[in-house]
Image 1 (tube, rainbow, N blue to C red):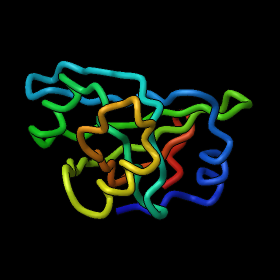
Image 2: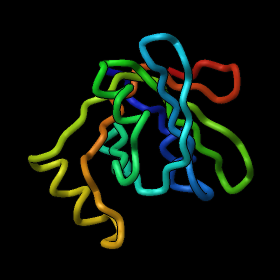
Image 3: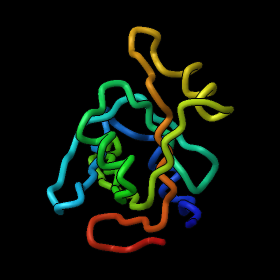
Image 4: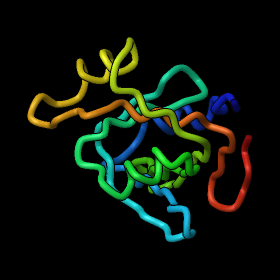
Length: 125
């Protein structure tokens, strides 16, 4: 796994609005969804609450990689790429249930284990 660089961690703290989570199915068809319930997990992963995934969930469970794109308040974009882990129990799941808004189902804690970090076309890690 890749540690997320300090400048990207600072940018994360300055996120603006929703992020976009992108996955791909086994036929190579992309799928992208807005996500709003997400938090860093240490310095090398992001936890995204599965509140309403369908195609996204299927792609993750099929072992497909993905990426997460977010913007700062200054509209600078960052992309985190990696592999997923899908958790329906355990400490990470329990923590997600604590911060996920109660009106959302919180079906699972989806962990994106970061392997690459970009700002635009520039690879940062």
